[in-house]
Image (cartoon, rainbow, N blue to C red; front, side, top):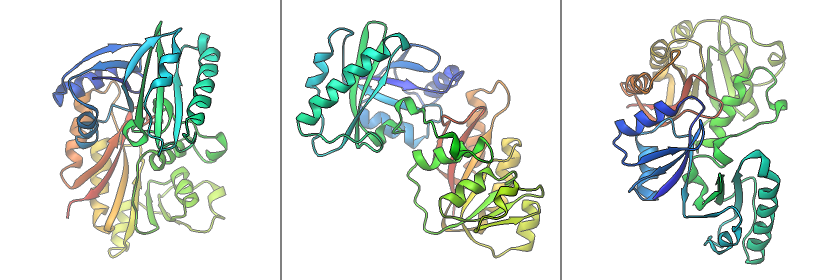
Length: 327
């Protein structure tokens, strides 16, 4: 079985070492700095469960390769099988110089599939036909959207600049809610190290009542928003002053070592409600290795169950983990 795997730029070595650590059999053929063809004996269901289950953090997106064809023979793709009970979209990856040609072919394929009774849904498809062009070879395959890890082509999600009013960090949290199927039972959130308030703004936009904890000032534009409460103190002081406080979501994007950040999260874990979740950005050292990421994961596992962990498109020298306390 073959797959097209995408990771963030400059993480090839980390991805390969992650596969070695978890003993995922197969070979990589790299097309560029982020995309590789992975040839393995693992079927789609097994491969997907391993990526999610361990979890493997450096696989940002992947798609199965059902077949290949030549650049001038796209008619073969019209015969691929898709579930007529599911909506679909077609996602492309191709060199810039032939992009216009590939888009025209995609439009023809869309018309063909619609005539066959399939419903197009570009924003939230239930299945995706991926077409990946490398040199003269066209790789293509159909996957249910959740199996791709992201509904966006290659996992590259681009938000409108209008959504980032306080800081670029807002994109990271918006991507979390877009990519991971989080199930929360309440709407009380705590933002640790909140200043200048980008994550608090995102949580407020999503309908949470937010307790923004930071001795520093928040962006003045947040002060007039209903549902954001600035607690101008450290996280430790907040715990001391509010020992019985409960929240449904706790987030942490503080710029400190992974060990420090995780310890602060551990201190506040008792304040999470029974089914509460934590979202934490794990900062990695400069020139980090897979071992650095694994060490942070294992430290998290001391007191938390890891629900999801992945280096998202908007993560740089870091990855994002979704956790819940071990009861």
